[in-house]
Image (cartoon, rainbow, N blue to C red):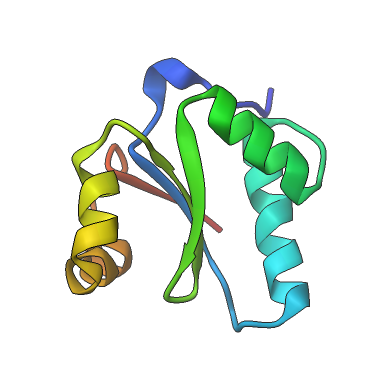
Length: 100
């Protein structure tokens, strides 16, 4: 079954955007909504992310949802260079889960 399990939730769930086009953003939204097991729209993504305690963002060719209480959520706002490095190279799937 495809769906989101909050008990095993990582701090960040990210989808890499190929470019900054509308089509690429729609594909990323579709992948994230499929991961959460909800309908394919940005509104559904925002609602389900908020329900599970995440907020949604776009940064450096990534569409991501990040847990509100995590250390990374504070760092993502205060230190963009560290956030860029973390999005691109963090190997631990409990911290960042990348959806392909």
